[in-house]
Image: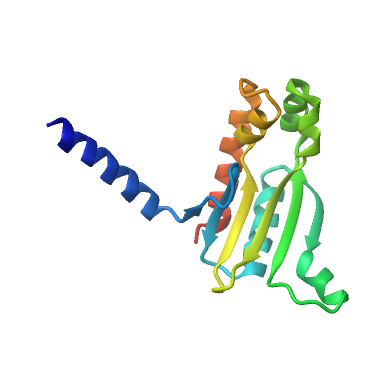
Length: 154
């Protein structure tokens, strides 16, 4: 009976990850497959972030930068945004968190033309800066996850 229960747990775990298209390229980096093209994903991200009350600080088109120096790069765009109501308390837990803030969404296309939306998990950042118990980190993780899901949802 214990063997069957353990196998059921493993099956549920595998199925849950096969239904959600999440790729963890590195520890702390969350990447979600987008059903949209790179530009549309980026535009959706910018609109959803702005409509949610965040300030957009910068838009960086890495592929355009590569083109200016005669090099090729698949679509790679960075959206830098934030809100002092979340960022300030996070930095009050550890000022070094400021190196990782404001938060960012990276929209990129892989070699198979699959577009992804990637971001750093604030809970991981809290661990990185030795403030894993900082309460705002979990709230920021949930907020970013919600924004990211809204961006990639048809």
